Amino acid sequence: MLLAVWFGAALFFSAVVAPAAFGVLRSYGLPNASEIAGAIVTRSLSAVNVAGFVVALLLLATLFLRRSPVGRGRIIAEGICLGLVALGTGVGHWVIAARMRAIRAALELPIDQIAADDSRRVAFNSLHGYSVNALSLAMIAALVALVLMARGARQ
Image (tube, rainbow, N blue to C red; front, side, top):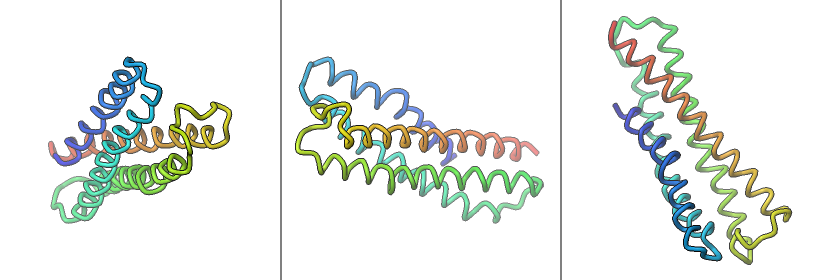
């Protein structure tokens, strides 16, 4: 259930919160709309990533305590998926997001006002892509783990 709740929160964040924050703030024509939206999204994503990391580690720790007729292969597959959730959310939070925050802090202007071809903006945009990929990997792995868990519960 913990993994399903986290998956739902991550999906809601990705499909609703992040696009809405940028869309609404940009609709007001503020010169630093992306900077404000980015701050909202960064704070929200932090909660999603840390929660995913903790849930994955908790489920990994209890994975082998379960007494079920589930085959060894399924347990290993669940463990790999949960490891990928922990890896994606951990790297997303403590590596990628940390580097993005460092770039933002080093800028003398809001990110919106930095030229698109500026090396810092290019690096920031690249890190954003990695962040999306890390969360996507974690979400796909969580979905696969949920399916494996559900199939195991029926046996």
